[in-house]
Length: 464
Image (tube, rainbow, N blue to C red; front, side, top):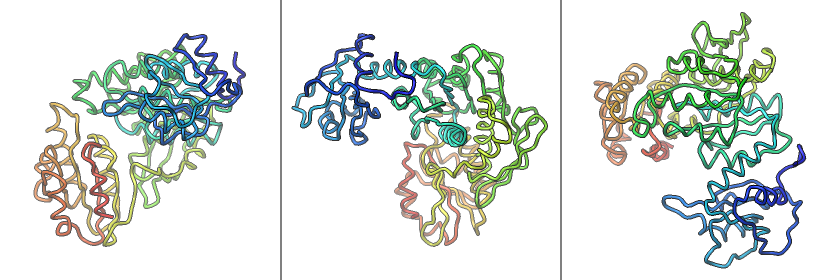
């Protein structure tokens, strides 16, 4: 049995391979120091840290085995490969782990390593919108109370989640893990590795609808977060979402709710967006806790409320919860406020888009003190048969919250159509760029948002 407070070593890796029969281990450089710490795992040779584990994965457009040499040169002490590299390695690693399916081997290894920490509080987070922000808020708030491991960036899939778990060490008392879905079964699979004992479901929206097929199927996929909790596991549910709250009936243990509506265990009231963030009052068990947060925009109230319920589930006292939430810093990425040319305020929300996140971003734009508010909105992808209706809905919202709506992309024409006379449409970014100077004015507050595939960060670059 591993020492509770030991970090992962080459010896641990050897024992796992011997016990599980997952491939074979070679020692090309001779007998290694089995007590040497095995550093972080990664599938990107550019991110290899000295002593780390490099996992060569076969992608749609790239084969990780091509970068095994680069990973070894970066200082990887272990390589997880399906086969030996065709070219001689410039630097021999301590060990080479050969497995027929490196991804499957990685997942099994991560699940085994997570099982070494039976007392660990594992918080799984899912939702159509806001997973990464909420994960960051929960992790930051919880870190004021105990050592926490959190998914880096949006490591929320069958690769990112096991890579995150392999960073666990005995010092951690909690892990906060984001879990994404494309279809039914995805969270159930991830939960088999993570074994979360607290499950957070934020919302259900028409994201990845082309793959899942229906909003009901998306809801079923999200419910797997609750279905896979152990007996006594705690469910954290959005009280305001009519597709999330019914999941309480399937909960195997206690349920805590959060939301803006009366009846939620953690309710947010008196929410006000300010230039420096937002203020709100938490209501819990009849007590009121006013807080000031550095998070920008009213929509971040849900992330704060979900974090409050999560810390409550783990046993943090309410007054300490309010203090922890107030200490959460502003997000470093995703939604960024930047100063552009001609003294324009650029709200860079170009990372991704869905109907719910479009609504939240437009509310944030509407709260800005500027002579004019401009929304540059691109296609929301993967909405399937409801795409036109959802784009028109966004257009109606935009008309109410922006002085000028600029729609970019084939589907975005429905945004412009619904927004009416204060909107203009361009079939692509190139067409828009020709008119950018005539459309924008000095001092404008400009929101830029669209699905990842629309690459709207290019528009942000023009504005800066």
